[in-house]
View: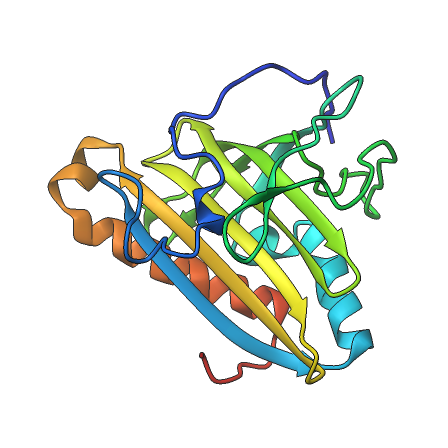
Length: 216
C-alpha cells in the first residue's frame, strides 16, 4: 500500500458536513439527491465494538466492492475534522487523531483529513472517486465518519457512516448521503444516481452486518 504526504485538496461541494444535518432529507444541498437508511445489526457492547472496528478499517467500502488504491493520512498536526450533535451544532473532535492505526495489510485506519482513492463498479455503474474523510468519531457509544468527494466521481457530495450502541442495548448502523449528479449521463438521467446509491447502501450493510435485519 502506497502512502504519501497529505495534499491540501479541497472537496468539490460546498455543504461540508451536511450529512449530519437533522433536516437533510427535507432540505438537501442544492441540486443534490439525499438518502438515508438505518439497520439494527445486533445488540450489546461486543457487537458495537466489532462493528465500529470494521467500519474504521474500511470494511464497508471494501465489502461494497471498492478497491482502496491509495490512503494518505493527514501529515503534521492532524486535521481535526468536524462533528455535529443531534441538533446539527458543531462539536469538538471526540478523540486525538495523533496516533495512526493500521490494518493487517498496512492500510491506515479511517482518520479525519485522510484522502483515499477508491475504484470499483456497482451494477455496471462507476464508483471511482477521490475522497476526503471529513470527520471521524470514536465515542463510548458512537463510532463513525463521513467521506466527501474531492474529484473524479460521477456524483459530487458526501456520505456518512455511523454505528451507535443505544441505551436499550441495540446496535444500529446508519448511512446518510447526498449526491449531486456530476457526469453528463447522470445529470440527464437522475434515476441512475438513485440506483447507484441504493446499491451502495445495500452493499455497505452486507459488509458491516452479514446477517440482514429489518430496515428502520
